[in-house]
Image (cartoon, rainbow, N blue to C red):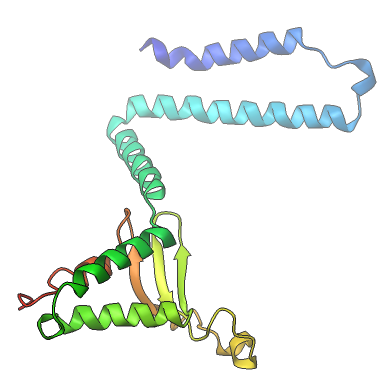
Length: 191
Protein backbone atom coordinates (compact mmCIF):
# COMPACT_ATOMS: atom_id res chain seq x y z
CA UNK A 1 0.00 0.00 0.00
CA UNK A 2 2.98 2.28 -0.49
CA UNK A 3 1.31 3.58 -3.65
CA UNK A 4 -1.48 5.21 -1.62
CA UNK A 5 0.96 7.85 -0.41
CA UNK A 6 1.37 9.16 -3.94
CA UNK A 7 -0.88 12.12 -3.16
CA UNK A 8 1.53 13.42 -0.52
CA UNK A 9 4.47 12.99 -2.89
CA UNK A 10 2.72 14.94 -5.63
CA UNK A 11 1.82 17.74 -3.24
CA UNK A 12 5.40 17.95 -1.95
CA UNK A 13 6.79 17.98 -5.50
CA UNK A 14 4.38 20.74 -6.49
CA UNK A 15 5.38 22.80 -3.43
CA UNK A 16 9.10 22.41 -4.17
CA UNK A 17 8.59 23.50 -7.77
CA UNK A 18 6.54 26.51 -6.65
CA UNK A 19 9.31 27.53 -4.26
CA UNK A 20 12.03 27.27 -6.91
CA UNK A 21 10.20 28.90 -9.80
CA UNK A 22 9.21 32.49 -9.12
CA UNK A 23 7.32 34.87 -11.39
CA UNK A 24 9.48 37.84 -12.55
CA UNK A 25 8.35 41.24 -11.29
CA UNK A 26 7.57 42.54 -14.76
CA UNK A 27 4.85 39.86 -15.18
CA UNK A 28 3.09 40.66 -11.89
CA UNK A 29 -0.53 41.80 -12.28
CA UNK A 30 -0.61 41.05 -16.03
CA UNK A 31 -2.44 38.51 -18.11
CA UNK A 32 0.68 36.28 -18.02
CA UNK A 33 0.34 35.86 -14.26
CA UNK A 34 -3.36 35.10 -14.61
CA UNK A 35 -2.57 32.59 -17.34
CA UNK A 36 0.06 30.89 -15.16
CA UNK A 37 -2.35 30.80 -12.21
CA UNK A 38 -5.02 29.23 -14.43
CA UNK A 39 -2.69 26.46 -15.58
CA UNK A 40 -1.42 25.84 -12.04
CA UNK A 41 -5.01 25.46 -10.83
CA UNK A 42 -5.84 23.16 -13.72
CA UNK A 43 -2.83 20.91 -13.03
CA UNK A 44 -3.65 20.87 -9.31
CA UNK A 45 -7.28 19.88 -9.96
CA UNK A 46 -6.44 17.10 -12.39
CA UNK A 47 -3.69 15.72 -10.18
CA UNK A 48 -6.16 15.58 -7.28
CA UNK A 49 -8.61 13.75 -9.51
CA UNK A 50 -5.94 11.26 -10.59
CA UNK A 51 -4.92 10.60 -6.98
CA UNK A 52 -8.57 10.19 -6.01
CA UNK A 53 -9.12 7.67 -8.81
CA UNK A 54 -6.11 5.62 -7.70
CA UNK A 55 -7.27 5.65 -4.07
CA UNK A 56 -10.81 4.67 -5.01
CA UNK A 57 -9.52 1.87 -7.23
CA UNK A 58 -7.85 0.36 -4.15
CA UNK A 59 -11.00 0.62 -2.06
CA UNK A 60 -13.37 -0.60 -4.81
CA UNK A 61 -11.39 -2.83 -7.20
CA UNK A 62 -14.43 -4.37 -8.91
CA UNK A 63 -15.82 -0.98 -9.82
CA UNK A 64 -12.41 0.14 -11.11
CA UNK A 65 -12.10 -3.04 -13.18
CA UNK A 66 -15.58 -2.50 -14.64
CA UNK A 67 -14.82 1.11 -15.56
CA UNK A 68 -11.42 0.21 -16.99
CA UNK A 69 -12.87 -2.61 -19.07
CA UNK A 70 -15.65 -0.35 -20.34
CA UNK A 71 -13.23 2.38 -21.33
CA UNK A 72 -10.96 -0.12 -23.07
CA UNK A 73 -13.95 -1.57 -24.94
CA UNK A 74 -15.08 1.88 -26.11
CA UNK A 75 -11.53 2.72 -27.19
CA UNK A 76 -11.23 -0.50 -29.21
CA UNK A 77 -14.70 0.03 -30.70
CA UNK A 78 -13.61 3.49 -31.81
CA UNK A 79 -10.46 2.08 -33.41
CA UNK A 80 -12.44 -0.62 -35.22
CA UNK A 81 -15.25 1.66 -36.38
CA UNK A 82 -15.91 0.85 -40.06
CA UNK A 83 -16.03 3.61 -42.62
CA UNK A 84 -17.07 4.02 -46.22
CA UNK A 85 -14.06 2.12 -47.57
CA UNK A 86 -14.86 -0.90 -45.36
CA UNK A 87 -18.48 -0.82 -46.50
CA UNK A 88 -17.57 -0.70 -50.17
CA UNK A 89 -15.12 -3.58 -49.71
CA UNK A 90 -17.75 -5.71 -47.97
CA UNK A 91 -20.38 -4.79 -50.57
CA UNK A 92 -18.07 -5.75 -53.45
CA UNK A 93 -17.21 -9.02 -51.74
CA UNK A 94 -20.89 -9.82 -51.19
CA UNK A 95 -21.81 -8.88 -54.75
CA UNK A 96 -19.02 -11.07 -56.13
CA UNK A 97 -20.26 -14.00 -54.05
CA UNK A 98 -23.82 -13.40 -55.27
CA UNK A 99 -22.71 -13.26 -58.92
CA UNK A 100 -21.33 -16.79 -58.68
CA UNK A 101 -24.83 -18.16 -57.99
CA UNK A 102 -27.36 -18.41 -60.86
CA UNK A 103 -30.29 -15.99 -60.62
CA UNK A 104 -32.85 -18.76 -60.08
CA UNK A 105 -30.92 -20.10 -57.06
CA UNK A 106 -30.32 -16.77 -55.30
CA UNK A 107 -32.07 -15.91 -52.07
CA UNK A 108 -34.59 -13.16 -52.96
CA UNK A 109 -33.95 -11.26 -49.70
CA UNK A 110 -30.20 -11.13 -50.32
CA UNK A 111 -30.62 -10.13 -53.97
CA UNK A 112 -33.16 -7.38 -53.10
CA UNK A 113 -30.94 -5.97 -50.37
CA UNK A 114 -27.89 -5.82 -52.64
CA UNK A 115 -30.02 -4.23 -55.36
CA UNK A 116 -31.28 -1.61 -52.89
CA UNK A 117 -27.72 -0.77 -51.86
CA UNK A 118 -26.51 -0.56 -55.46
CA UNK A 119 -29.39 1.73 -56.45
CA UNK A 120 -28.74 4.02 -53.47
CA UNK A 121 -25.05 4.24 -54.39
CA UNK A 122 -25.79 4.90 -58.08
CA UNK A 123 -28.32 7.62 -57.20
CA UNK A 124 -25.86 9.10 -54.65
CA UNK A 125 -28.42 8.83 -51.86
CA UNK A 126 -26.42 6.58 -49.55
CA UNK A 127 -25.07 8.36 -46.47
CA UNK A 128 -22.80 7.29 -43.63
CA UNK A 129 -23.09 8.75 -40.14
CA UNK A 130 -20.14 7.89 -37.94
CA UNK A 131 -20.91 8.02 -34.21
CA UNK A 132 -17.40 7.21 -33.03
CA UNK A 133 -17.99 3.62 -31.96
CA UNK A 134 -20.48 2.65 -34.69
CA UNK A 135 -21.54 3.83 -38.13
CA UNK A 136 -25.10 4.23 -39.34
CA UNK A 137 -25.76 3.68 -43.04
CA UNK A 138 -28.92 5.38 -44.28
CA UNK A 139 -30.64 6.42 -47.51
CA UNK A 140 -31.42 10.09 -48.03
CA UNK A 141 -34.40 11.39 -49.98
CA UNK A 142 -32.35 13.36 -52.49
CA UNK A 143 -29.04 13.19 -54.33
CA UNK A 144 -26.12 14.90 -52.58
CA UNK A 145 -25.55 17.12 -55.64
CA UNK A 146 -29.23 17.99 -56.11
CA UNK A 147 -29.83 21.75 -55.92
CA UNK A 148 -33.59 21.84 -56.46
CA UNK A 149 -35.80 23.53 -53.91
CA UNK A 150 -37.15 20.32 -52.28
CA UNK A 151 -33.60 19.03 -51.85
CA UNK A 152 -32.33 22.11 -50.01
CA UNK A 153 -35.50 23.05 -48.11
CA UNK A 154 -35.20 22.19 -44.43
CA UNK A 155 -38.84 21.05 -44.22
CA UNK A 156 -38.43 18.31 -46.84
CA UNK A 157 -35.30 16.77 -45.33
CA UNK A 158 -35.28 13.60 -43.26
CA UNK A 159 -36.26 14.56 -39.73
CA UNK A 160 -35.25 13.07 -36.42
CA UNK A 161 -38.65 11.43 -35.88
CA UNK A 162 -38.55 9.43 -39.10
CA UNK A 163 -34.78 8.98 -39.38
CA UNK A 164 -34.99 5.40 -38.06
CA UNK A 165 -37.08 4.44 -41.11
CA UNK A 166 -34.22 5.39 -43.44
CA UNK A 167 -31.50 3.32 -41.70
CA UNK A 168 -30.51 0.30 -43.78
CA UNK A 169 -27.40 -0.93 -41.96
CA UNK A 170 -25.30 -0.47 -38.84
CA UNK A 171 -21.53 -0.86 -38.85
CA UNK A 172 -19.75 -1.96 -35.70
CA UNK A 173 -16.38 -3.61 -35.09
CA UNK A 174 -15.24 -3.53 -38.76
CA UNK A 175 -18.43 -5.19 -39.95
CA UNK A 176 -21.79 -4.10 -41.32
CA UNK A 177 -24.19 -6.38 -39.50
CA UNK A 178 -27.29 -6.30 -41.69
CA UNK A 179 -25.25 -6.91 -44.83
CA UNK A 180 -23.64 -9.87 -43.10
CA UNK A 181 -27.01 -11.16 -41.91
CA UNK A 182 -28.64 -10.82 -45.33
CA UNK A 183 -25.73 -12.61 -47.03
CA UNK A 184 -25.67 -15.50 -44.56
CA UNK A 185 -27.81 -17.76 -46.78
CA UNK A 186 -27.61 -16.21 -50.23
CA UNK A 187 -27.77 -19.34 -52.38
CA UNK A 188 -30.14 -22.24 -52.98
CA UNK A 189 -29.85 -23.48 -49.40
CA UNK A 190 -31.49 -20.38 -47.93
CA UNK A 191 -34.48 -22.21 -46.42
